[in-house]
Amino acid sequence: MVTPGARDVSSRSAARGAVTTVDQERIQRAWSGLSSRADAIADSITLALIEQEPAYMVSATPDIAGELRRSTREHIRQGLRTLSGASAADDNTREVWRRTGRERARQGIPMELVLKAYTLGSRTLWEELVLEREQHRSEIDEHLLLVAGQQLWRALDSQYETLVDAYRRESARMQQRDLANVLVILDGLRSGRGGDPAFVIEARATLGLSASQEIACVVGPLDEHGSPPLSAPEDALDQIGAVSHWNIRDGHQFALVALPRGSWNSIVSALAARAVGPVGVAHSPDGVSSFAAAYRLAALTAETITEDSGVALATDRLPRVIMAADEQSSELLVHHALGNLWTHPEPQRETLLGTLAHVLSSDGSPTNAAKILYCHRNTVIYRIRRIEELTGLDLGDPRDRLLLTLALVKTGHWVRAVGQGDSSTPRGSFK
Image (cartoon, rainbow, N blue to C red; front, side, top):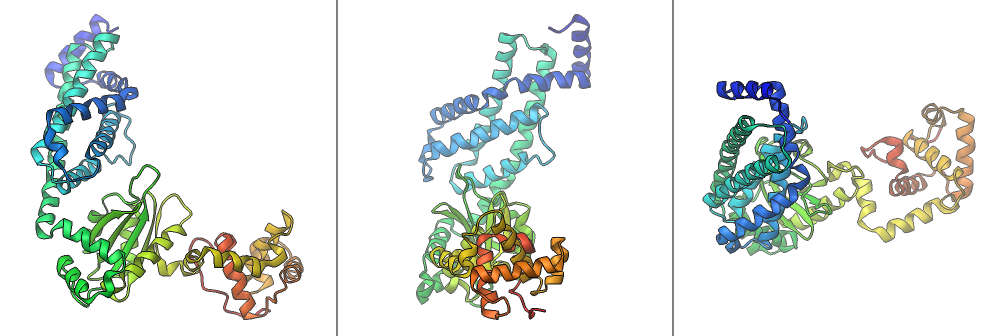
């Protein structure tokens, strides 16, 4: 309940257009009270939108109703977090609006329908807040309810501005190149049609590429909810002067990226901040002709990323990429190279494998490996002898060192020894 004195203060604050900290906290708690019903509210908005605006269903987008439901839920959840003051420092609310503007432009949904959807969503939230107050006697009075409404509609104005700008920018991009044709070209290049000279000519014309244009492929798998691993990657690449064409097929988000200047690492750096999943980048040395091979290489690179998210260049992870390319052969190599060491009892096996990785990454020096492992040099030498007994290999033989290094790359022990960046195979001789 709100005391009469508190109501008088709220009244005066609202009349002056100012809101005290206490009043703002009350408003935020009122919005927070709707959070548990965010998805139900969003679903009611989706149904009303489809009923009131059947033009939405004319879109060629597969399962447009499901897409609207997903998007509306995301907007309502994010909106309630913001209105309740629960947004984190890395709040991406504006990015959600921008993405929606781009997506609706691509889906061919008229802008006025998109704006009506936002208006409907804001009105529904306001009605739910009023209903919540009437049913549960929340601590905000009529005047604070008015202030909450004013804040909600100001937020809607900001949404309009951001969404319209993104929609118009994407529409301009689509006018410059026919998106449908672009997607067909990307699918063709991914499936290997880069070997067809006539298709190559068409691809270059559609994508605006010269015969000498350097290109790369970016690939990342969608997560279990069907969300892409990169958020608004076009904007990130625009900032480094790269032109990109994106598509989603067979559970992967992928792109052809043309970089007029700079190195391929600049693409990695630009996309890293946008990554919410694993993403691989691979150069296509023969332009569009070798794009299919670059796609496979980039996809394999993404598979080597063990963290929740990250962007990696294929050439920085070649040993792991090679091992990921042929699962059957790589398993054979592990069993062949490690022999009885692979079936050796724990924890001795892990100790020996860890020692082996550090010895190989230290150019075969027991002294340097011992420093890293915090043990005596003689201990490392003993372990080397034991490893050679179990594997039947000679750590002084370059071929055997290569086999053992590749096996450790496959098992993950090499990464744990040298870090995430792949080093070359050991160079020096054993001392």
